[in-house]
Amino acid sequence: MKGALVARFVVHIGDGKCGSTAIQSSLYQSRASLAEQGILFETLTPSSGHTVIPLLLGLRSRVEDPARLDLARGILELLRSKSEQYEWIVLSAENLINLDPAELPQLLSWVSPKADDVHAIAYVREPSAMYLSSVQQILKGNHHYVRPENYLRRVDRKIMQWHDQMGADNFTLRLFDRTALVAGDAVSDFSAYLSRLTGRTIDLVNQQSNSSMTAEQMQVMQRYRRQVLKNAAGTVVGRSTLLARMFSEMNDIRRIGHQPQLTEQAEAVVGQANRPVVEALNARFPSLAMPVVGHGAGPSDAPYPWTSTKLVSAILRSCDEDIVEQICAVLPDLNDGQILTGRAFEDFMADMYGCSRMEVAPLCDVHAHYLKRLRKCPPVP
Image 1: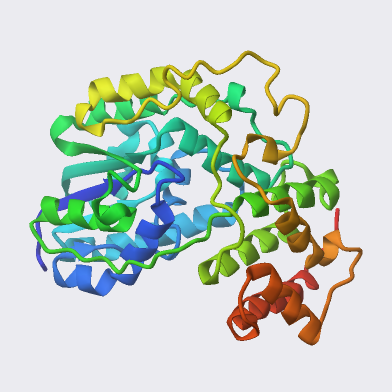
Image 2: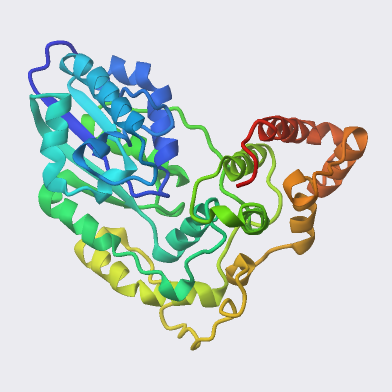
């Protein structure tokens, strides 16, 4: 819609671990169809939307790299160059939830000086589900993880700030849970939200992914960080990043092991500690109906089962140790550099995944690509 005098904004502020990557990738792939309906979404980072932009407002990041600030400026210039051609502009950055919402007008003015009508949407996870997802992320950079009794995340306070700043009519909060989302996923839910808000029929490209690690892969990742990268605790290292990428690519083809679930006790401990968060959100947003996990369960007193061990399996409901050992057997860093090759490797993988040699071929290809990239990685620190 050319010649629009007022830029109307839709701002997706997160939270992290709530489908942001899927939403941002879908928005990027749907740019052309959105543009036809007068909606602008543009970025130079297809799978992370506008996540670098808040860095220009001083928001801290795990990776301090001046090049990311240059990237943010490049994305802003791209958006600014097209902003006057569209009625609606969509921004998506899961770290915006950590920004003081009073700074949002400054950010929007960098995109368009004519910003007027602004709507924000956030997704929030029930605390025990968020905790489990956070442990998965932590293990990619550290073999130590936050114990259930030490996990308290006051996301309610951040959301209240945004709600107060935006006003009830311009702020939407959605529960990130399959039973609560439209069609059971974040992309469909966000599509429905955009459709209601803009009055257009929005159907974002939706590609499902199984990239999260299984319970067994979580334990392998922890062992990898503890044994191979013990001198690099708490840092992002190429070798473990490659392993996480291999797990993701394999899981998109065929998953192995169990869907991660907390033990009832771990779930109850997290639920009880974060009960004030849930109650505060439900009080402010009655339609959210976030469940109070662990309510009435009465988690037993410490020491807990995970107190005497550092293994992540202590908080997981199901974890097959045989599968853990099989996965370790195909990782040269955990197998003294030894690895099966040829037909013997294909047979091993077929047995591990419980499928035919033909079905396992794509998985073997992913593994071969992983080994090729691994050889180019810097040596173990």
